[in-house]
Length: 491
Ligand SMILES: Nc1ncnc2c1ncn2[C@@H]1O[C@H](COP(=O)(O)OP(=O)(O)OP(=O)(O)O)[C@@H](O)[C@H]1O
Ligand SMILES: [Mg+2]
Image 1 (cartoon, rainbow, N blue to C red):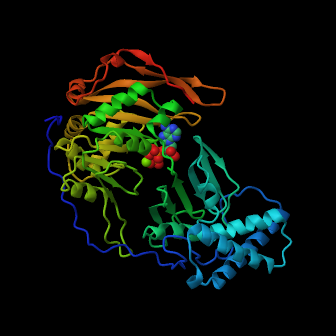
Image 2 (cartoon, rainbow, N blue to C red):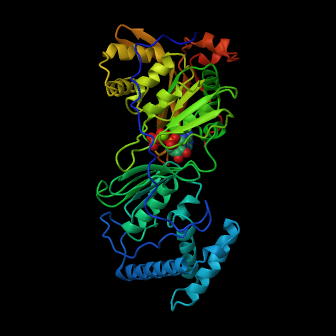
Image 3 (cartoon, helix red, strand yellow):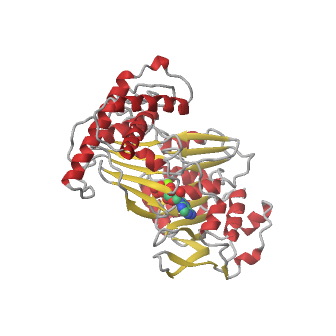
């Protein structure tokens, strides 16, 4: 009854996809313990010229590093040869200490001039190579890092507190990096090789991974890791960081509770998925939620959730399951809510139709630079669906489907904020009418180069206030009066 209007047409039927699963990655890994450590082939010693400029090194430093790598490779190889899997038991901690002893004894047999610190580093790196993801382990254990960006084997950037910096972490060569990529993607049943040179995957802790390798990546394999970590950002963090004010959170809580259809917009890395995750926490526990994503990033806590993930084509180019296929399927799963990680193609039309045909309370994100830009993006994406819909019809679909648009933005100097909450009111002629309810007004940049400003309520009462009241929302209408909303305690 609360649907803004009904749909214009039927969605295109899903293309039937064969049920062939994608083959597991070809490279076999020697498994010590199921789900635990692996001692795969050592990083190969072949040299591949890296075209990405590494930090400048003197000749002596370079030689020392090469010797270090050679020793590490040799130790790793000996370790793999000497491991007797049948005698290995115990949990990962115990296993690690057993293998450390073995590595120490192997190192003692080497005639090396390494000092104590370098020896310890060497042992740690051999263990990281054996149990984990080699050079990445040091970065993955740092909770302050939100992104790890690898541009070829010698250039690794990280993002901390919204700022990018180059690290000293390096892979031995392109083959070493490819080996680590293979370890990551094969763990989730995917592959990354010449026939499938781009892949999405995730780490066991939920971090999202994208890898793209030569020949598509011209200067060596590139991998981007988006970390959510064991400690995801919560609404308390948003308030503590000054990303939002409590009144806006309270308002959003009731919008989700009252099953408004909400679109999250923002640029790359602006915080869309984090916001989607947090908005989803407001979905009541007794509702059935279906989530649809390319690489599962959402971490919903509700008891009744079905998680769906897309699948790339297999080696013969068959078996691809898209967001659109899953979305169409999900509508037959009796969902109370459909949460789509990101609409970036023809599935946008299906999403609008789902929102218009009784699946209220749906949430999704799209890549757009403002709440108004979102309309244009949706128009373009709907056109990609192959339906020859006139622009006006697409706008009508949009205006009747979407109730609220929330914008996430990464501002100058790194702070991420919810910069606009906009109500979609309807159509006037050919134009969609919208009103900004809350806005962040940037006033300047502080001495650390970080944007600062204030949140304001723009003095407009949303048209759906009655709907919020009907859902039991005790919201105080005075928050819609024009005013500056004080930030609780900015970081
Ligand atoms: N309000 C916030 N304050 C601080 N950090 C945040 C905030 N929101 C998100 N982040 C961090 O910013 C990074 C990017 O967030 P997120 O993945 O949600 O962005 P996104 O817009 O979905 O990115 P993409 O376009 O790559 O999918 C993450 O590491 C996340 O933990
Ligand atoms: Mg995202």
